Figure 1 (tube, rainbow, N blue to C red):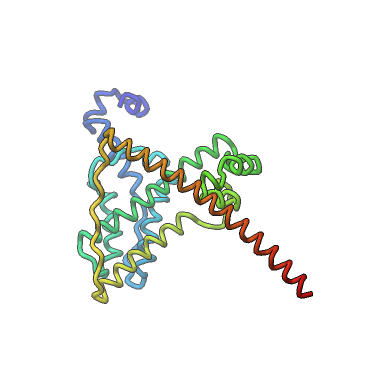
Figure 2: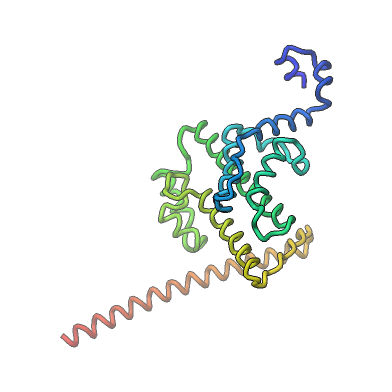
Length: 260
C-alpha cells in the first residue's frame, strides 16, 4: 500500500479513503485486466467457435498481464468486468441442452484449462527471456536424455525421447489448441447425448485424499517394487521376442537357401 501511495504521490493513509486493504487493490487489478472487448451477440456463430474464442480470451489476458495468475482466487467472480466475461461465456451456451449447473461447470472447465496452459506458457516465456534459448532442446539435451531415459526404466517415455517429441523445441502442433478441441469434443459428445436422449454416465465423485499412514506408505512401496519387477519382466520379454524373431529370420533364410 505504501509503494502504491508513493507512486501516486499520496500518503499511505490517504489511500485508505478509496480502498480498505491490499486485497481490494488486487481485486481491482484483476477486474481491470478483465476489461476486454466482448463480441456482439451473433446466433450464426456455432457454439464451439464461441467457446473457443471465449477460452482464448483468458490466454490473451494472461499474455497482456503476466501477473494475472499471481493473484490468488479467493471467491467466485464478483467484480463487474469479470462477471461480464462470464456472462459472455454463458451467452454462447444459451441454446445448448444443458442445465444451469452444467453450463457453469463447462465454463469452469474451459477457463481452468486456459488458465493452467497460460500459466505454463508464461513461465516458459520467462525462462526463454532469462536464458535466451530453451534449455530443454538441442543435440546436447537429446543426447543427455537418451542416456537417462532408457527403455528399461521408462519404457513408454523412451520412444518419445528418441523421436524428439519430448523437448522444448519448436514443433508443428499447437498444444493449447489440441487440448481445447478435445475438451470441446467431450462437450459435443455430452450435448449430442442430451439431444438424442442417450443415457449419460454420471460424474464420479473425486476420490478422497490418501491419508499419510505407515500402512499406506508400505503399500505404495510394495506397488513400486512390483512395478519394477514388471518392468524387468517386460524387458526380458522384449529381449526374448527379439531373439525369437532373429531365430525365425535365420530359419527362414536357411529354408530359402535350401529351396534355391
